[in-house]
Structure formats: C-alpha cells, structure tokens
Length: 286
Image (cartoon, rainbow, N blue to C red):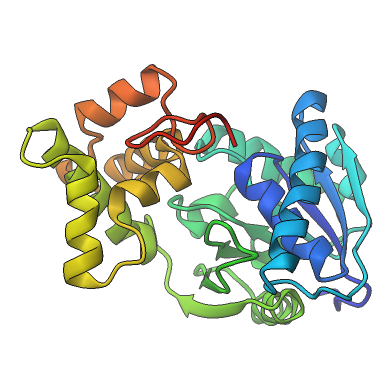
C-alpha cells in the first residue's frame, strides 16, 4: 500500500456527497481532483464547495486560518492517475459503481487506496469489480461530512491490512473518526436507518401521522436532532429509494421494499432539500 504523503485525493462523482467530501478535503488543505461525466454538474459543484467551505469555517467546523487545498475538476477518469487515494461517491446503482471503480482501479498504481462511499452495496461485492480487491475499503461518510465527524469504515473480507491502515490515516488527516464494522448490505447505519425511514413514510402514507408529527415524536421522545423524514430529505429521497432497493434485493426482506409514498415523491421530482420539496418545503433548490 502506497504511503499517503502529500494527500492527492480523487473524488468520483460531483453530486451531493462527492461535493461535500471535496469540501471537507480542501478545507483540510488537501488537493482534490473531482471527476464527473457532466461539465455543468462540475461547475455547480465548484460553486457549492466554495459556499460550503465558507459555512463550515464560519461555524468553526473546518480550520478558519488553514490553507485551502486546490480543487481541480475533470470529466476524464484517467486524470485520477497519481492520486494517493480515490473516493468513489457516485449514485447507489451497482452497474454504475462497477464501471467507475473498474476504470479508477485501472488508472491508478497498485497499492493506491480505493474507498467506496457506498451506503448499502457490500464491499466484497464491489471487490469483484476491481483489479486489486485488497486495496478497497468502504468508508460511509455522513451528510454533510464537514459537520459530522464520525464515519463507518467497512472492512470487506478481502480488504488488506495496509488499505485499512491507509484509510485510517487519511481519515485522521480529514479530521474524521472512523468506527470499523463488518461487511453486509447497508452495514450498520443504513441497515437500520433506511428501514426506519421507510416505516416513517409508510405511517404518513397510511394517514396515521403527518411528517412534522412523526419527526416531533422522534425528537421529543428519543432525543433525535432531526426525525427520520427530515433526515430522508437531507439524504435525498431518490438516494433513499436507491438504497432501499439495494437492501431489498440483497436481503430479500420485504420491509426494505420502498413504500408507495416514497416512490411517488421520487417520480414527481420531490427529492428533498436538493430540489426544495420532499416531506417538507425548503424554499427552492439547495
């Protein structure tokens, strides 16, 4: 495993999570190459990184006086060559992840740390897609990672000790606290959270309670900072449905089959905070 020295990081995918990870890394002084197939998405991501950096520093969650790492954007995955670590943060579709991870692993030197920010697809399944399975580690960043420091670190059956050590070192540089867990669909957080979101949405669908009341019960009775439905809006209801489908396909548990209300909201484009509408209203896209 190549030692991480000057921390040249590549992030694959300029969506919500990829952009937020780029914010975290550049805010800690790391150079980042952000890759996406869509130039317009990359241009929007550059603006979002600047805005998120300003917010995180204003809140004291990223160093206010530290150097800002250079952000480079590209539509060519071949530009990840030379990176000391690659973080995949594309949509939760196995076929897309397989293509991106295969191309990235072919572009970097052997021993380069490969990280999947998957929220549900098992790491050992992803290991089949790359040339060197021992270089792959799962790191499930929370959203947004520059505000939430704890991450799940998933060691797959074929993950090497050197890759796990390199991931731990990188997370330390990023100011993140990793909790190592075993492999399996959804790992810990999403094995529990996505089922909870699905049931909360089903309760709304059945007319038992309004979204605000569901979340108020969780906040007041269980001490949650946000309830399951506001959390779903933050994650993105499209991403919630994708994760539920992955869990349903890989566990066979009917409780993970997305309920009709979630499916109808996604079909209508009401994806949560990023579109301005989900279970709650947000006054425009973010």
